[in-house]
Image (tube, rainbow, N blue to C red; front, side):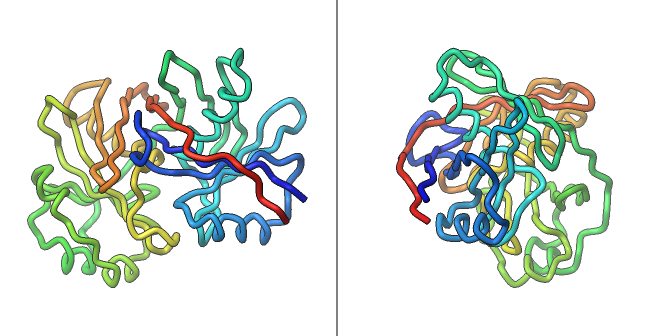
Length: 260
């Protein structure tokens, strides 16, 4: 059995930047253990599997360790592959664990229509106190923990603390701060060792929380964001009430086949 395999760098204009995702179009679903084994073998932060059924595309995402409910960069990568293989296509609708996700082709960028996700204030968990100290702007909880630091430099200078992160109940932790207002409105990093990812290079799902938060704080509906991991990722974010638009570029790095 042969499966097409694409590797796409998402949220970047250039190769070796952004977040690499594997994309595997399937004729029909394989069993979950096989999907998880493929994702572990690919050893990227996400592998996207998609199947065309009953006139629509169904999309699932796997880290090297688990299946997840929502993934932005691998959705961008999956749409990029479909647009590349079908040049006349302008829009793709995915059915997923997080409902319908629509991606549009807009010039040289792709625009993803994603849910806006709320956060609520919480106390900073003790493992994060040990890691980050108490000099924070705030701590919030949604689908991930989100910690706001005083400035972008404090986010950039962070060294991941695996022990502290593994002692948290949360699946992942966003660390963010206001940007300089010139290059970007806010910066972030994302850590999820429980998913087999110590630091994710660029995390679209995190921006479903970050966009409404920073939109409210800064009083802006359109924001420029940089995820300042070593690979860096660039997103244009639009807050539309219950939805957010996440816009970014993508580049094809490799194409091949998996042999099962």
